[in-house]
Picture (cartoon, rainbow, N blue to C red):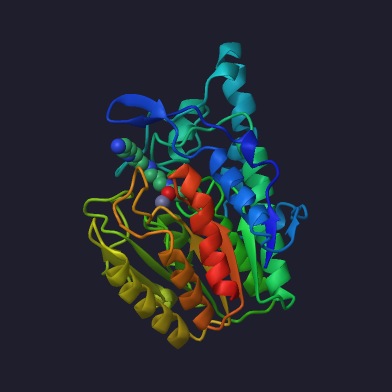
Length: 345
Ligand code: SP5
Ligand code: ZN
């Protein structure tokens, strides 16, 4: 399996995220991708290549123009407010909730930070745009390889993407790499594409992007949002809307879920993907379902990920894997490559 690796991922290096009234060190760190890369190399797991610059067009198929304009210039605006800002990350602190307007684009930078985000856990840094753009290029390159006939490809990038919506960042995510890959597969000729999100957290961004579309089936297994982030989306009664009705499947699972129960949900999701008629699959590959993950609550073990990969392979679809969450830093390498190795066998 070819890995498309984002050499620029480390340019996005947040310092702190807001948690319970304190700034705590970021969980989403460059070492995550480094461990996966090291494990791929240690196990000689296929070719590792750089992405081709995809240009803005495939990103604009998913994200709004005003959001992309904001992201691309946010860091220079932040530093222009105060030269001392160059040494600290930008975090939002004010948001337009219900009854506020979202059509007006305020001149105030903090107001636009809040307009285009939904949490205070996602610092925007000097290299965020460069890293996220190169990550989207990885997703597009991987989708192009699969669109051209490869059985599978792996987009190894960070920051992750599945919490990012058409016009918002959050959950450590800025550009929705999985959605960009799915759209690229559609544009390469697949009539129907499925996105399967196996990150611990519900892929609210991906769901919202495709919620009213019948050409992309979205399925997600995740911690029950009654207790788990992102809380406000990911419930079982969200089945799609308009032409997309019936094309969205959420399988929330309680904290403490073990591999046997998780795998039953995976099998259900894969049956629904087969019924959807999808011709290609994008897997949002989060490894924060691991028993040792510091911010999550399932109990999968490293060897279980081999079985996950084999189950995904049994779906028989051309597959693009996109790296998402997973914060037990050392083990994230073994766990990610176990999925890929289980798939490739
Ligand atoms: C891509 C992805 O996995 N994003 C997850 C974003 C979760 N953000 C909220 C994390 C809350 C951190 N809780 C810290 C608990 C420490 N004991
Ligand atoms: Zn996650």
